[in-house]
Length: 168
Image (cartoon, rainbow, N blue to C red):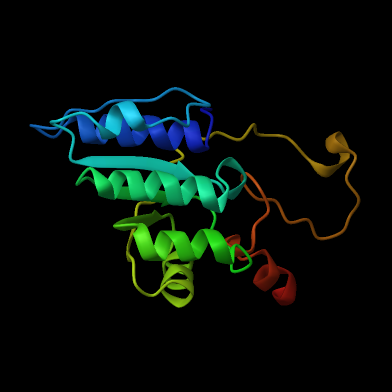
């Protein structure tokens, strides 16, 4: 199967956006946090970036979003995780962001509850061609005969793990 995560999301987003006419896309490589050369481009009207809280301090996020606004550009922030304890991050996005993209209804409702001001839309996380090998069983993996919960990626509250455990 294919990898399913932020890289796959980025690739799928680029493929879909590339189908639209009149859109110029500039991609910054992994680990690049200086967006100034994109913000200054005359023909650029939107800056999209993906947020994981650990990649941006609230101050860095504020500087980035203020810079985007200062040059008359719009910002789109994909939030792969929405967490109520990230109050400073959430405040900055609510005050300075133009659009937030999330992956589920649950995340959208959480952004509305936590932020309220910023516009939010859902863009599902694509996981094309994910395959599971047949014949894998508990014995092969050395797993006990107890209920097991598995998830893609990190175990975050918005994936409904708590609700699943409560139902078990």
